[in-house]
Image 1 (cartoon, rainbow, N blue to C red):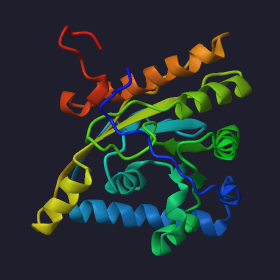
Image 2 (image 1 turned 60 degrees about the horizontal axis):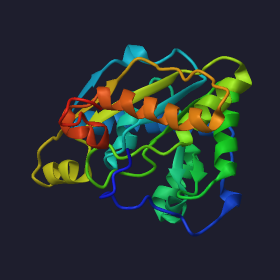
Image 3 (image 1 turned 180 degrees about the horizontal axis):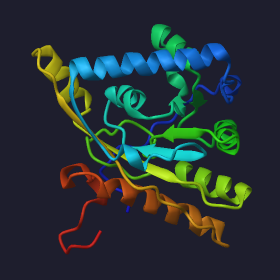
Image 4 (image 1 turned 120 degrees about the vertical axis):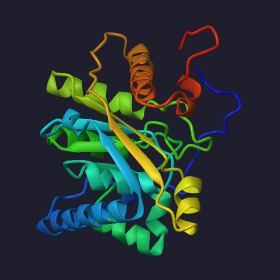
Length: 250
């Protein structure tokens, strides 16, 4: 159910479709991704106390959709450090103009997405990646949580999974990855006090969305399945709008 107290999802008003495309996996980009993975592992091992569970649930190869709850800046570093394969990542187009960060993300090769509007180019690029057998990672909440808990999911992840599954005539695996302790206040607060924050990553078993004749019903139902899969991996205080209600229902 939508949370009426939650701020509206962000909307990118600066429409720059020329930025959005599926990155080509050139030898230089493959090397850059390997470098970023190694750097991420070093940073996470040095700066945090990370606990990782369930890596065996990752498929050996794509296509696969990786869905992650989004708490803070450290989430991407955690994913790069521990995902066995560097995925294609959907990232907000506003970051393109960040001087150093934008250049680093371009070197890695992300799919820039304009949030809050139907960015068909980003969806097509992500579908191309899945059709090519790659892994695609995204935050189904559509933004960094403003509450530190799960917010209502947007429908992009379910749409991609159902559309790619229909094209391949077989459901694709959706791998839920739940993070705790990676919010900016927790990470930067601990580091300012020269303490290593405790963060966790829990990878759950893949789920699959079965095709339905009624597409309009299938996408919101699939979104609910994805968000519930994430909630099951999280402590109740992180489950947000997907936490059990006082009557015990969800």
